[in-house]
Length: 347
Image (cartoon, rainbow, N blue to C red; front, side, top):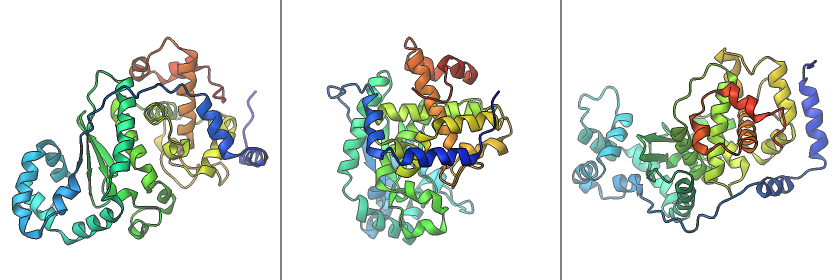
């Protein structure tokens, strides 16, 4: 018989473990279990365009000519960029008009200048992307490395994909947790993920979603399995990145989640959440939020996604004959859970 898990039990467990464990110990243990392939021999021709520099790194007298040039040099990206940045009440909606209008906007230029104070030199991030793309080619040799565009969307998009070959990052979303503009746009529990350390990881998360494709989501289990696959792919392409970055948690939140894995799983089971098909009931455990309802204040939002990640890792460990493609093509969440033999412990 399964008894209901009270939030106080989870908190007690957290306090007990917090007294005897440390973050470095956990980090070392996790990396010790990883089988990280050598990708140093894989050559990657990284195609990264600083689109915001092409738009705003010019003299104002050159805007009209440059707008036309940008459209000709980057037709695919320009199409989607002008579409998402177009004002609804603009009478002229041609790409050239929108691009010219954006390039003359004083607020966008001001935001660009602010971003360049941090991201004028992008070499460190290019190196990180290049390494991530080596792992991408290792696991997906048949796929082309996507073209990467950085741009400014005036806080509308942190990142997105366009088709299978374009990956986009909005640099203004990674200015640091104390960036003043965030205070009037985003809730404070999201500030910690708006740092330079999250830029590459956030882009790889977006790419992972594209690789997974559409999933039919009917309940919480479907949602956490899809999100677990996404985290699994991020781990493959960013094997040296801390779990806290991939989870978009603080170090303390990551430690709490790992230490309370069994209690979290028990909570989802005992509260009849795993097969709950009411999105209003279960999205609070997979979508960003200040904390996970029904658990102690230390429990971060989206905590059920961590469980999904552990299920996927357990599934691949228990089924070594399964390839990565087998995993991604398997949309039967219940069978994945059953074949993982997951019971609240990832080991």
